[in-house]
Figure (cartoon, rainbow, N blue to C red):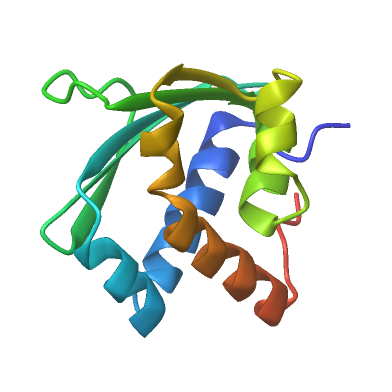
Length: 132
């Protein structure tokens, strides 16, 4: 059974995660040096989100953000997304096996590493996950 039953659940999980980690000093530091737009194309459930980071701030937009041309697009299932943000996934391995599809520069994807590490550490410390 899928971790997320609906697009609203997936969107809510990721939005809440970013709201919570954005208050952490290490996330604020990572955001200071990040100028990047990433479109996340999720399947099972179908959901599109765009993360735009610049000037120490970020926005997450649900659906296709027409006024943003993403630097990178990542495509994955909702279950892979959950593993991605909880640290249960070897991201480079998932890219190699195409569990995560990438359009754009891998170098730009790697700019997200400090933010991903912060999210993973936060999730493991809080010891709670998504409960459908």
